[in-house]
Image 1: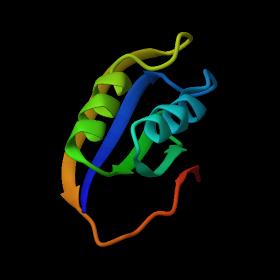
Image 2: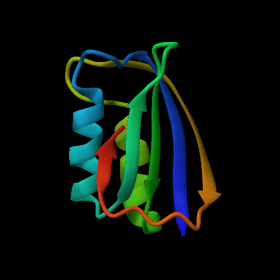
Image 3: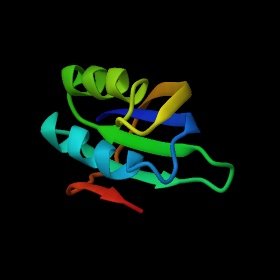
Length: 89
């Protein structure tokens, strides 16, 4: 399965970034998870079709209204993991 693994930095914690990521991922038919990291970044693992991954990746560079995204580091990875939904962990 094709997955997007991303780290988003900037003002991305405490601004509804994770919940908005869940909403965007579900709207694009993706599964996976997102979480806050101790260094202030948000980590995202999203799996699904390439079109959905591209849409989510583009959205991550913008984020929700209250966020200020400084950088998105993303890579494509192959995963055998099967996620049943998109969760905040």
